[in-house]
Length: 176
Figure 1 (cartoon, rainbow, N blue to C red):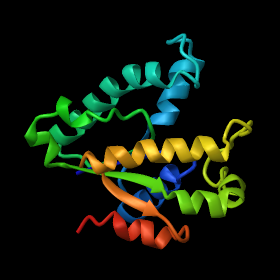
Figure 2 (cartoon, one colour):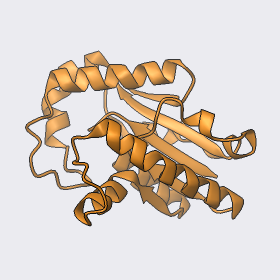
Figure 3 (cartoon, one colour):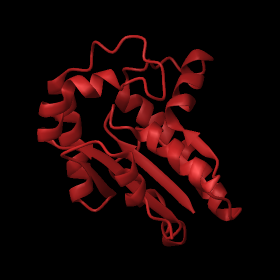
């Protein structure tokens, strides 16, 4: 079983993945760690801001790692961005039946009412050195973009609306 967790920045993908791996003892692939490893090692000239280029570089690697895990009957949590909206097109049905894909989306209301909290908890799982680029308008646009992906049945949406409740998010990732 592959558990794929994506969503806009600051939605808690890494934190939710951590809770799933603690509960299930599954290994985890962080797409952000893979991204930074490629950048810092000099194996790409892309920067962390090159989202489209990073998606084109990272997705084929992540996709093939997921396929290998499925073929070996291994469980894996994959978390991070850089998952294209047409990700299912790259996988045969035999692979798709082994993948549970979730997308964390914050509602407009949640972002508007809790922007200070979002910024305050941005380092809950990873140390962000400079988060000044993360504005309310940026989060609104990014979450709207991911919501459209969910509307097209590419992912199961996990909506963060009234409150941010990690137990509720974990319950949404039902595996039983």
